[in-house]
Image (cartoon, rainbow, N blue to C red; front, side, top):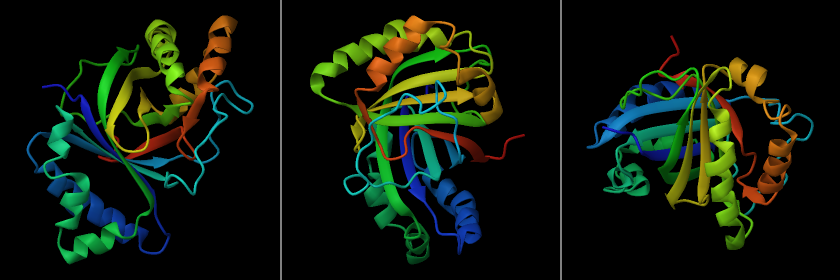
Length: 247
């Protein structure tokens, strides 16, 4: 089995009632989703504050969708993995949630600025920290997830070539790096995403932030390509896994 499909939900939560919500999510909601046919794993992440952007300084991401046009929640990221995206569509996330008992729907209503994508793996690259892939194993303890659209359709071929020829191959020897998956969407605002996994958030901050500085031509190309993208509000996110607990 291969986990090539992803149901990703970004959202915020109020402080009041957050503990009860998290207990419900981890103990009730996630098991209900995982009981659906085709589910392979679940993982829940809390986004970091004061993230050092790639390249330092102001970072590479310069364009974001307006908060009034795209839901802007991002403090929590809930992910489910499956073999193929139609595992999430019968019923769809919206239909599944609407059919839950009243108490479950009350908990779901606590989410603020909820944004959902159903995505499919386009390509994957492994790094020094990669172990033998296990289909039912949750992603790593530290992740970075960017979700975005190209500025125009003319930019997409250049972006795809950059990921294939430069961006993904360049990651193979970055210390602390586990895996990166370029994703494309079948449903949701973002047409594209890049999902990076690290041994820890600290490993990302130590080794990944400035990894391109030793290759100026690579950094220049990255800034040019990324500068054309329109990211979701506050994307990309750096996040720590809070469920399953990191051992």
